[in-house]
Length: 226
Image 1 (tube, helix red, strand yellow):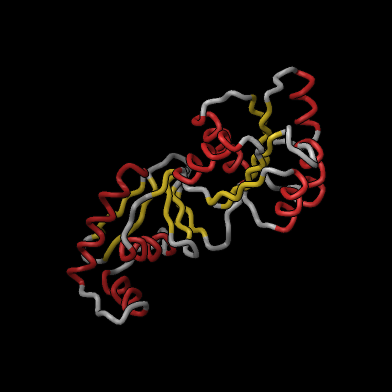
Image 2 (cartoon, one colour):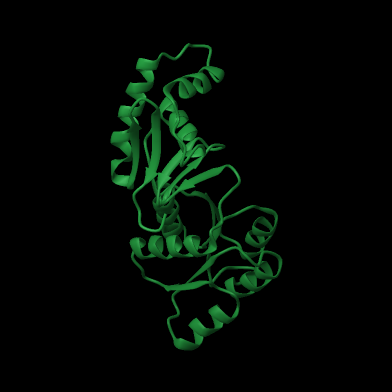
């Protein structure tokens, strides 16, 4: 999930890039408002964080210009100015949310998650079940914004199951699809091992791989309303 960050404070920006990357975002960072405008207009981003006090082109101007061309991208404004007039100006310029400095990183994460839930913007390569997302193009899996550590085979098995959600998938189907992408034959016993490992790793994600006796496996979401 690509995120654009426009922030001219290198210490804060470095901390944000580190934290957001650990949370599963692919972050592009720029310090200059004019350069940020060109990159945002020409790039493909799911969400953006803009500091108001940018050089060349200030954050509010950048926000207005980008909003005209990219009306759907969720944007969070960062600023040291916390007066009511400043907040109103930021929201009127097109911001979806507003965060004053200093702030705690978990709050920023929560606001980003809320914006992404409301926007429901997902790249075409992303499969989603509840808060579990799998990006086939990037070969990454994350729950909410927390990345999961899966092996290549575990990720491939999850990809098969999530693409066949609400359907029972047999071990033979899984083995066949894995064999299509590999020069090594995959035995049915190996499929059981992958399922066992994957099931353990998905336990905190409110996603379960149910064994349907005599048939195969069914991926289920345990979150309400999913």
